[in-house]
Amino acid sequence: MPDLAVKLNRLSLQNPILVASGTFGYAREMAAFVDFRAIGGIIPKTVTPAPRPGNPPPRTVETASGMLNSIGLDNDGFDQFMTDKLPYLISLGTSIIVNIAAKTNDEFRRMAERLNDAEGVAAVELNISCPNVSGGVDFGTDPSLAATVVGTVREVCRLPVIAKLTPNVTSVVPIARAVADAGCDAVSLVNTFQGMAINWKKQRPVLGNILGGLSGPAIKPLALRIVWQVAQQVQVPIIGVGGIQSIDDVMEFLIAGASAVQIGTANFYNPGIAGQLVSELEAALQLLNADSVTSIVGSLRTGS
Ligand code: SIN
Image 1: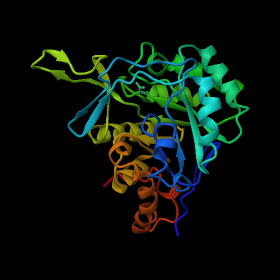
Image 2: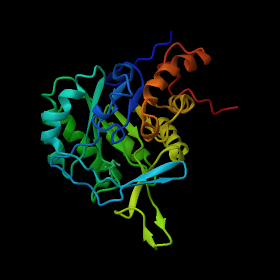
Image 3: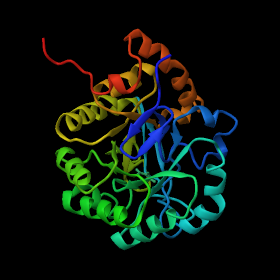
Image 4: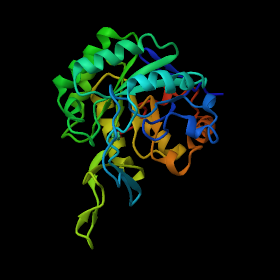
C-alpha cells in the first residue's frame, strides 16, 4: 500500500488531505458527516484577538462554478476559542492547525505565544490574506510585512508555522520567498480571489460588503498555476487550496508541487468529501506506480 504520510518541514501529517479554514466551522457541525480520524487534519475558522461580528449580509452568493464570500472574519475571539472550541477540536484524533488573523504584529505574537501552551495543536496557520476586512491582505501583499509577521510568530511559538497567502497580487512568488526566508514551515496557496456580484435589476451589489472572495472550482486552474509557479522558484513546502473537489484535482495539485491540499468550498455541498478523497488516494497513487505521496510531489514533466 502506498505511504500516505507527508512531512512539511516540522509538520507531519498522516495523509495530505486537510479541510480549509472557514469551510468546516469548528468541526462540531461536521461530526455527523466526517470520520475525523481518517483525514489529514482540520483547519478551523480564523480566530482573531477579539470577537468580530463580521460583515453585513448578504455574505455569500453562488457564482458559476463557485461562490463569493464576504464573511469578514466573524468569530467569537481568541479567548473563547481557547476555552470552548479548542478542547473539542484536539479530542478528534486528527491534526489541528489553528488559523489566526490580526491587525498588528503584536497581536499575532500574543496569540502565538498562548498557542504554545495548548497541548495537541499541530501547527498555526497565519491568515495574512483575508480580502474581506480592512487591512486583511496588507501583511500578505507586501513581502517585507509578510516576513515580519512570520518572523515574529517563529520567535515566540514552538509550533510549525504556515503562511496562507493571497492570490490578489501580481506575483505570489516574492511573497512566498520572503515568508520562507523568515522561517515558515509551509505556505498555503491560495486564499480567495477578490470578486463581486451585481444585481443589475436593482442596480445594487449583491454582497453587503460589495466585494467578496471567490472560491470553488472556478479558481482551480488559477490556484494550480500559482502552486506550480511557486514550487518552481521557492524552496518551501506548499499546501494547495482552490477549488479541489475530486481525486483528480488532488493529484493535479500534488504533481504541480503541493505536499498537501486543503478542501474548501466543496465541504459546503459534500461535507464528507475529505474522507472520500483520502479513501481514493491509494488507488490513484497505484495508477502511477507510486509507493508514496511524497514521491509524486512536484513530479510534473514539462519537457518533450
Ligand atoms: C472571511 O471571513 O471573510 C473569509 C476568510 C478569508 O478569506 O480569509
